[in-house]
Length: 149
Image (tube, rainbow, N blue to C red; front, side, top):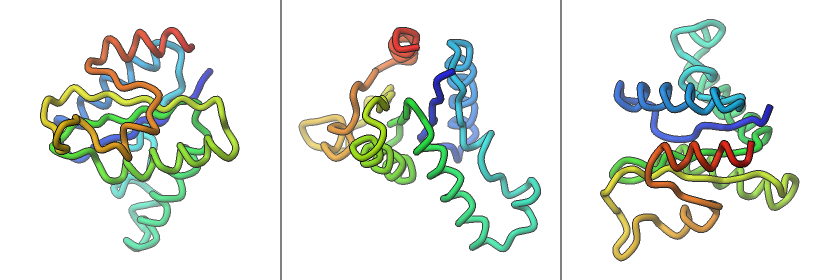
């Protein structure tokens, strides 16, 4: 089964629900999805709850980095006034790793938000250019993913 890393904002209740529902729909297509809010470090669960904050932050970075490097597809949810900075780093890591070691990896974006932070473009070129495709709605994204499955 292809592995998909789900990058994007995950801090509000609305973001978490959106991410969980979309991850389930992607899993129904036959992907193994790493959803950091569900599968990553959770400060309320052991062993992370017992860790000092700095050690927990390192664990978040290392687990997410390893999952980014292992994925076949990185999905970046670009919604928000500006795209999530953690997801931007994950995209950068996935792009660099693709150039060096995993040329078949797909990098895709989902941008359902009509707000644009860049004059004359919806996205900063440093985010737009590494992406193979950007979709305006979840159904179009799911159609694309079904086609590469």
